[in-house]
Image 1 (spheres, helix red, strand yellow):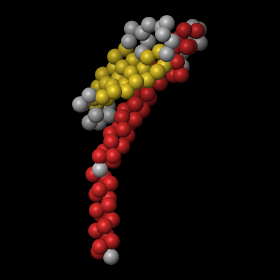
Image 2 (cartoon, one colour):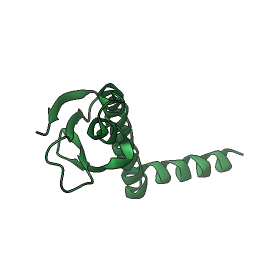
Image 3 (cartoon, rainbow, N blue to C red):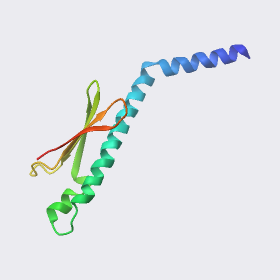
Image 4 (cartoon, rainbow, N blue to C red):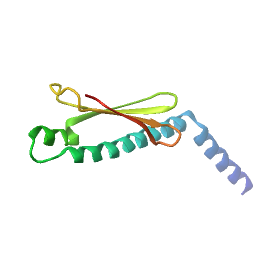
Length: 110
């Protein structure tokens, strides 16, 4: 019984200490950062929609944006840009702290 517990502990230690697990955890935090930015961006998009302007209605739909995600030592950077190349500006950049996944800066593209 004691040997089985030791073996199980060793297996868990190896799994959680492995580079693959660390990479999965890092990817998980990146996805969380993307979700934080997406939630805030979606809230902004809802404020754009006015029902009077075709352009505003187009810009208020999330499907009309591409998203990008990168990271530095301290931040995740999430960018949303319009997919229509004829549109200049209208995107947003979110800088999110790796420590607590809080938005530290929002930059609007004009």
